[in-house]
Length: 168
Length: 101
Image 1 (spheres, rainbow over the protein chains, first blue to last red):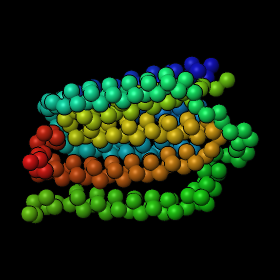
Image 2 (cartoon, rainbow over the protein chains, first blue to last red; image 1 turned 60 degrees about the vertical axis):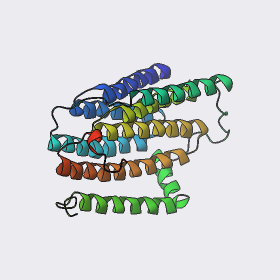
Image 3 (cartoon, each protein chain N blue to C red; image 1 turned 30 degrees about the horizontal axis):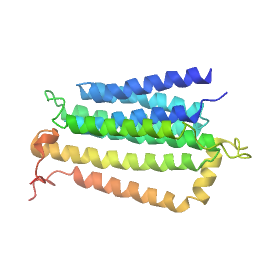
């Protein structure tokens, strides 16, 4: 049963990812990315990462994708050629990565380390334990993340101000 | 009966390769940023799968940080796209060759 659920989510994720790259209209591209985000969130739920599933929907689908759609509709680019001339490079890199992944899985016998015993599901809720970890072990990276967000905010405001590109 | 973690690795590898090929192949700057999101999501799937496999929550915390960085990247990237569009009236990557020799 769990395998069928996973296969459904995986199939939709891969198809939506392909559509993002292949489709000509940027709006359809963004919308199929939305489908992919929702299915990734579903995958997180099956993995017992409920907090991340909620964050995935709120932040990715709710904030980031709306920003993309705003920009797509603001710019309103109509006609454009779809692909550029880097096709051979992309094909080469994709094939190399794919063969590397296949070789690694074949040579290592397609196994990962066994899960460490005694660390089965946490007793408290998912959100609670993540919060505890975030405010104890990862306190410093957490503060750095807030700094990154501040820098991004200032950068976005300055970059989208009028006259920034024409000043030189 | 849970899904083996190797399935998640295969899925994440596939999505990552699709995103990589998308970054290299497309001309539209917005689609390139969307493909970067695809790659970030692929790594996030891997993080969560291993976090569940090893019963260690650190992987989920790292997904949280990756999400923060993705949000910052989108904000700055879209601002750059808008500034470029104001200047060149185009978001085709072939039109921006200022740094090419």
